[in-house]
Image 1 (spheres, rainbow, N blue to C red):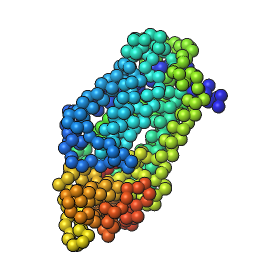
Image 2 (image 1 turned 90 degrees about the vertical axis):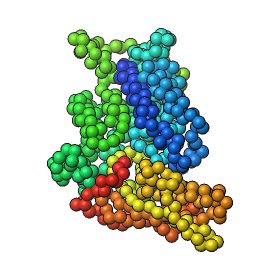
Image 3 (image 1 turned 90 degrees about the horizontal axis):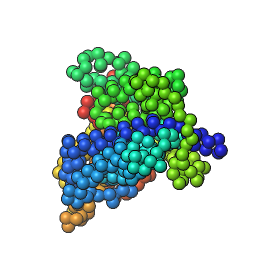
Image 4 (image 1 turned 135 degrees about the vertical axis):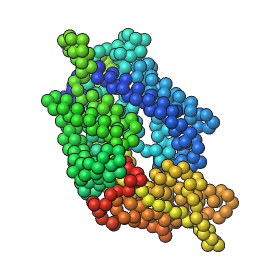
Length: 460
């Protein structure tokens, strides 16, 4: 343990952490601005009469009145505080709480990069990235230091490695290796890029190149000789993702995180080179980095180990469920299963009054937005939530609680449409649980690699 603590508390330049802190804060500020600019606060959270909740977080509700607008405004101030290093600990913690609240408001808007933001933000709450080039350092010069213990950078690097490696590992599946859904997506972009993009060899290069980049490129970032070359390839990869797919801030946030793999003082070296000077690395000792870090170094290393163990194990939980998680959705989220599926379907809810046997259909668009309906259609856990809501609403209107069945047919990565939910099951009687859902019909249709994926299918 002494060797680990020595490495964790080895003094390093704070410069790369500062650059990442600034990049993270500014990226989050831009993201908050996008919610205001595009009207997403209203269209995503205020207008819909029903929001899908994560299991165990059904109690999270929208602020009354204009509260959510004030919430986003405060979140923007917290992001700016992170970038400027102004009341940094408070700003980082506040942003974590505020952003997590928005994340939990509606399961419809789950994105891997929002989950990534939460993880990075949680680490920034404890990483001392505000001791230099910050308003806090100006406000309290006794806090200022050009060096910090290495554990903060190590924590962020390990988080990046986990994300990158899993992004490659999850693609070692039969669909991806058969070039789906990649080939189907590229076929829809012929008008934009030309017929060459629909060629199988283009999809093969993209699909297999992505696997190689993540499984081999991520470890190679750890070595000085290969770091710059791999970083350049990653920069091109993220730029292409930005141009081809609507994935928001993820490419820029990930690129900012990837710069942490360079030497801790790379910003100072770069600035010195721009000015035509030679940078001399400081050998100043590391200052105490807070009460816990200075007095309990073993505890810091232990907590870091537990955090990383959780990051490694949580994405593996889909092995606890039968079937393909891209079909069942069980264990799909929080597992870096990015861009693995092209999925769409049709859905019909039938309600039956228990005593009279009267049956009627409900149009989900009477309650949901088109976006919510599109996201729910092939996600069993969300279908179950909405079935409970329909039964609750009927009962609240003074009618007997009905049974609710769902007739759902979905296509995954270009397969023919197949039944997803057992239509004989009364979903209103099925509890929300983390156990295997027996009412999900297993995927039985094989992939036809020559068939193009539905161009309107949803990808994650």
